[in-house]
Image (cartoon, rainbow, N blue to C red; front, side, top):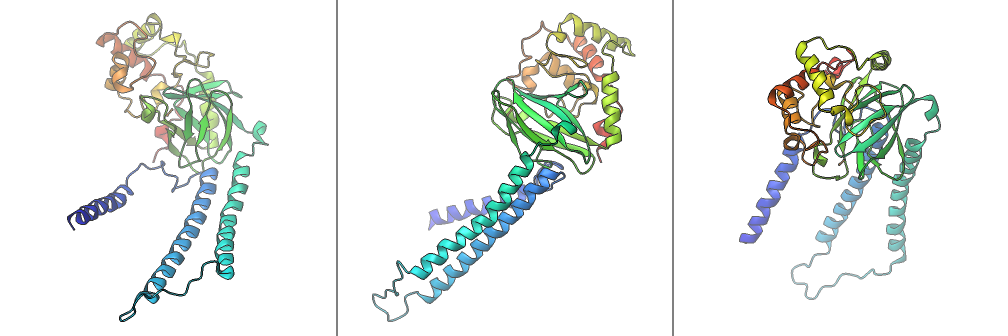
Length: 350
Ligand code: CUA
């Protein structure tokens, strides 16, 4: 009896947590609140499958309860065995055909959707972005416009953007739940997926394949802006001059330090063949730092001085001579003013 009560308590707790945690999560980070074509397609399949499964569950439960009540041993009945129906042709046929029909009802739309979402026939007429997964950040290369960025991917609302994904190290998985299903970034081949957003907003992305120490910190954002704003963003990014003089003296000193400390050995500012570390062109407009932290000056300084404490296993740790607090502050000042465009995540978040 005691063990039974214990189990009941555990199940009650799990049940409670299921309902309590179902309310957690961030806006624009749910496949159940689709905001783009691929996500809507997935949602229709989720609903279809859930309805069929619920129907099957209810039918099985109803039959189960009826059988349980009707064929139970009644008072005075000794050694009662109900009529045996093993090998009954009618019943066997019915419960073979019904599941086949139900599976076909699920399989046909799923197959059609799979081919639809994989169809890249018009890719050459649309925006194409080469996406590279790295431990533990994402790189975005707008091949048609020679614009590069990392971590924040800008797309125009209503338009289809084709992403061509690969990885520079291990397998990662690109997932923006509110916009589309997940797709692997592999080292040996390029996978293509469509991305489209109905409305402006900042959509959270996650790496969905365990890839090392900081897998859970490999977050990124998709920033959907109106087509006009997107055109402006591309233009601003293209016009950005990495050499332009920062406005403040501290930022200028930071710019010199950026050069002296050889940060440019790995990081590029502006479009560049260097893609070994995140591109910092629009760092001042980034939504997050180190995947999930707020990009405050204090956090940026901490990141520069002790990156391992913020993103374990990252490749910057131990890469440059130590940086004093004063130097870190100047570097932060320089990085924070890298704002090529006024089309920013802030300008679209509600
Ligand atoms: Cu990249 Cu997990």
